[in-house]
Image (cartoon, rainbow, N blue to C red):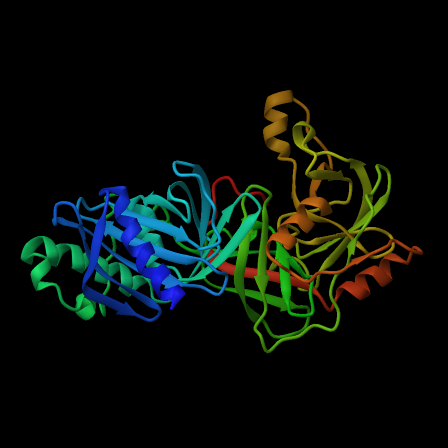
Length: 414
């Protein structure tokens, strides 16, 4: 009963974006776990907004609505929240591991953050199956399976109430079977670009089939993302979460798949001059279908402009190595290969062509990302050194070719 009361309160509170008090619901919106309807300004009796809520297992209630002025609002509510009224927060949202946006939310109530959604975000929200919301160190996943019909029902609600009044409010879901996209005057930037095959590398970090790769490997993918272990049939991977800032993405194999072997992350810092081994699938389709193995050393403990999140490595990497595992000589993960210095750009700026300057994401950033995504990864102490051939052999059961059809991003690392 308390949950039902809190959901109703959340629907009413959404009206504070445009009205001091709200009453309702009038009519109904019922799609999947979403419930809602139309609401009025309790002081004037005038129509205020249409909204619907859906509770999630993570303890958060998602509230989406459109007010009488046509603005779309997305709110995150929970009885456990303790915000100060007027407090602001930035919330990064990623849809299906591809489209992303930053929302600027305000706590109009102590237990709810609300943000205006631009039209392009509404359109993406409507089409998406999964939304990952990140604020600080908090990462939350939301299934948006019914989001399309809900957006259509709420748009229908606003249109009908403005035309017919609250007294004639009814079932607003009757036209929801054919959702209409939210207005967006600008066409999708990728609409005119043909999809092309793109690929990278990933590696399994849990028995449940969690796969780590680079965000730029999956960014722009259209349709299924597939993972292939050498010599085995491909499997469709689901996007769990991604971090564009640190260029990391987390995928997951089908629930029917389990892995006896997976990567362990080194629990001690690596040093400059230590030997490393990079494994990946460079130039897939042009070179071997098997992964390739390269060796080198840690050249520096920081990346470009002293970025401490990265290692500079001397192990040669090429397009397709992105997202692959970087091992120490004991076979433990010490980084995620992310790219190489753009030699032509540096040559144009300096007159010199740099040689073999490559980068990997450190395990500190990787472990923070996995912790935020609640992945049961394992760490290991570096023990006796083993041969490079044994490191490669041990990595074979969990190092994957990641591929999809997608739009190449102009700023994508390769």
